[in-house]
Length: 487
Image (cartoon, rainbow, N blue to C red; front, side, top):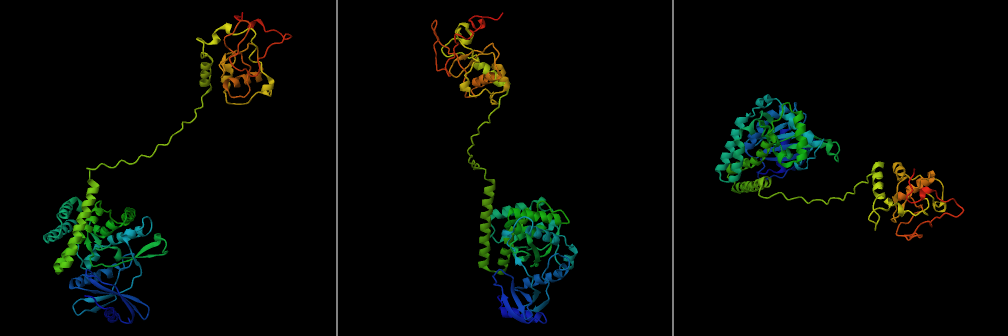
């Protein structure tokens, strides 16, 4: 039943001496809530929390936690709600009045990963799980070993199955996991029992920076006991993101005095699924048919969600779609710098290549050279423009030395014949640049082609004009005569 805010304020005034209520704010209740809660502010600007059980079962459960909270308050790095006064109720039980604990509730789905609140929450849970078991025994709270707790879960499942509201798919799934003894090998641990975002109070040094958050208090200790540590991770395992959960579990493992078992999160997800069974059994025992139908519908939706998740994870009938291939970029091969020997071989192949229209290279026919042919090393200084040697390094030195004394094939298809006379450095370098095509200056070329006696025919333009010997100049020596061989 819902109690008015004024009634709750009167309970607070009667329970705590010197508490004179100035204002009261009651939290809206729902049918599934077991307690009426209100916030009271007195004339001394102190804030209090009034908590009143709605049933005898809730009253007995709340009474069992009073002794434990007094013992834990001095042994945990965060606060717990310790009652400062009690007020008896006509229907039985009593209301408890607590000092207000500042802080904000946490949405596990928005828990940020990384150093900060997630790691702080992991260390807070570890501090509780590291607590002495004797404190819970002294407070009269239950303690279960691993096999007993698994059997208790199986019994709860059997009771829920007897109602006829549990889908067969969920029954088979839960029975399989509960009968797997390997999953239930854990060390009994002091637990909160119902750790949700509504039970965690956090504060921030900087409201804009989640890394400054720390756990201020844990509330709602009615389900506290010594049992499976996975109970305190059921909400986190199903609501928190994977990165946040990984951060939390890492901080938890580092702060624990005992190493967590490898199946802790598997059992935590099972506990989250089976939590609906407790609500179903509570509704059935209370005779609330509307609430029973609501819980049955929740179980049907849960079965559908679990079925879809299993199909998505184990559906081998559909092959994975082939991802779209990105267009492969056209890779331009890098320029390969050939060494002098490779370029020398290429030059040799060009020089001895056959000339178009001839069966054999002209270089092999001595009669192809006219006796009036001039020395190929003689160049027109006007065309060159300078007597200085070209310092271009496009052609390796080894190739220039190799071209001397050999025949070369120009771009116009004419053959240039080397001279046996020594050449100056500038003439030699210029000839080499012409053969390689790396210089704008041209050497005088001897046209090759069919000729009639006494006349030389040109197959293409000669640049510069053909050089001839004047009458007053010395005639070429006998080494330039056709068929001449050096003795």
